[in-house]
Every structure is written in structure tokens, then in C-alpha cells.
Length: 386
Image 1: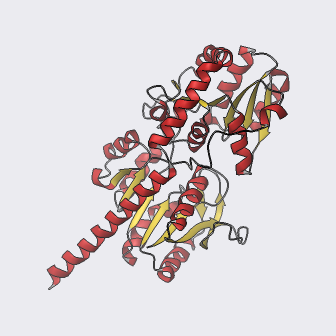
Image 2: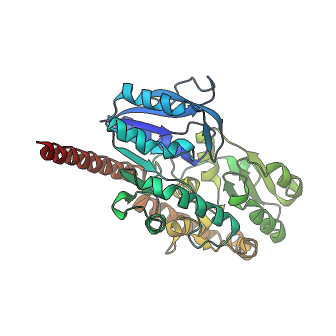
Image 3: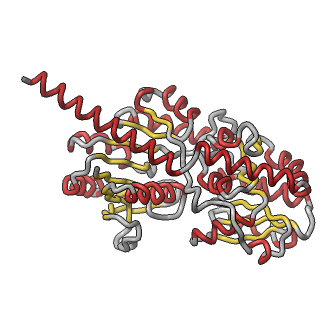
């Protein structure tokens, strides 16, 4: 089977990781994969993805959205005509081209599958969740014309169905992590940082990630000189937060880490992973930490609370995150046996529900169903004509 994957190659974000991990396993399972992604001029001519690549012209792209050029749809159509894939899988990049895909693929008679990533807070408890609701409302009428839409949780599925996407078109296939690569192991990061207890945040430094609530709680808790908070990542709020939350409080700003093995080493050294987000989909960073056997704390935004439910971690409400963490951090710092047990339960939960292998097997089944449905439609159309 030949799959044309439409996704992101940069800048680094969960969508990029999702596309890389899934396409790599599809290639390992002997699928032919062509990777179509947005690029500005020749900025990304290297073929590091491991499969045939096609660049689509864009004016701007960020971790959140992409603005294609006016010719991008023509380039995409021409590329699909030449590639002749069996199926198109779009890992949606929040681009105007997302709304044209059903029409393009219908004209070319190619089945179309989408993975819909936007974060959300199903309880709509803050302003940011309101803006994300608009995104879901905007996309729902167009997603109804995709052959299948993949989401990461039942909560997200119910949300789209309420907005009018036919239930039979929405499939729940949770994110998956490579549990052989992301696993407990030795690491010297904690020694390098002179830490006896290491707490880690890994992700974007932006409003919806709510990192300042964690920083405030850490600063108020005063856990001692041998407990460190490591902030791994970068984003628009980094420069404004760093001056107020520095080394004197045991906070270490690592910055963006491009080396995957280095990120794994950080997780293997961590005692606790904290994700204080106001909005999420299903965080790959959270799953990676769980797979490494780290005790995890996350809000119930998106599907993250569902991941940690029933004792696999500690779930916070998105309201008053600072006060909750202020109470919780000293307990996590002082009770090593509890955090060790939480880490074991986190690893077990990932093995049970969130492996990359399980994710890909679900995709294979979905692809087969979509292709069978399309063949059935063509057969019925043929019988009607004759």
C-alpha cells in the first residue's frame, strides 16, 4: 500500500514527532510512504525522513499554524496525480489547505484520512479553551467530508460528534510511544545538575502550557538546594519568565533539546514529570515520560487526565494549578517510595494502552476499512450504471 502522508517537518512540535514516529514504523512494516510537507523555498531540501518527500510552498509556518502560498493547492494536486497513492493521510497542520483536501482527493478519487490534533479543554473552563472551541466548530463541517477522522480520546470524539461530524467517521486511535526506545534506564543528567531530586517540565513555553503556574508553585515551595526543576523547551514566554525564576530558586532553563537520546536521558534521570497545561490533545511528552517510568503530574486538559486516571499518575484541575502544585510538590519531593510506585504504574499504563505498535496496528485496520469502503462504493456505482 502506498500512503501519501501530509504533515509537518518543522518547527519541532507534537505534530512533527507524530508524523516522524508513525511514518517510520509504516516504512518498517513495508508500506510505501511519500511525505508531503510545507517548506519555505529550499530551506528543507534534505531528505532526513527516510522516504520520498514533496515540498509544498508556504508563506509562514509555526508550531501552531501554517499559511500556504496561493499555488500550494495546485502543487499538492499535481503531486498526488504523479504519486498515485492508495490513500492520503493528513496530519492536519491548521492550514487553509486543510479545508480544500476533501475536494482535491474527491476529484482524484483518493481516500482521505485525517488526524485532528488541536488541543482542547472539554469543560471549557478558561478563555483559551473558548478559542479552541472555535477551531473545532470551524473544522467540523469540513471533517465531515473526510473518509475518516482520527482523534486521541473518546472525549474528543464526542466533542466532534456533537458538532456534527458523523459518528461512523470518527475513530479513536490514541497517540503511541516506542516503549523500547522510551524506557527506564541509567542516566547521568541528575549528577550533572547536582540534584538529588529532579522535577522536569518538557514542552513549549507558551500561554496554553501554563508553565508560569508551575514556576510560581516551585518558587513558593522552597524545596531546598538539592531539588531542581528542569525546564526543557522554548517558546514565546521564555524571555519574560527567565529573569524571575532562575538558578537561585533551583530552576534550570535547559532550552530546546533537538537530540532525542538526550531528551530520553533527561526523562530517565527525572523523579517527577509535570505538565500544567490549560489545553492539550494527548501529550506525547507525557506518554514519553510515563514510558520512561517517571512519576507524572498533569492537568485534566484534553485527554491527559484520561491517561493518568485510576492511579497511573496525579491529575490536577486546570483551575488554581499553582495552589494545587504548592501543596503537592513537597509531598512528591519527600516521598521517594510513592514517586517510584507512580513511575511503575505510569510505565504499566503505557504498555497496556499507548504503545506505538498498538497505534500503527489501529491505523492499518482503519486504512483497510477505508479502502474496502471505497471499493464497495465504486462497485455499487458500477452496478447502478449498468
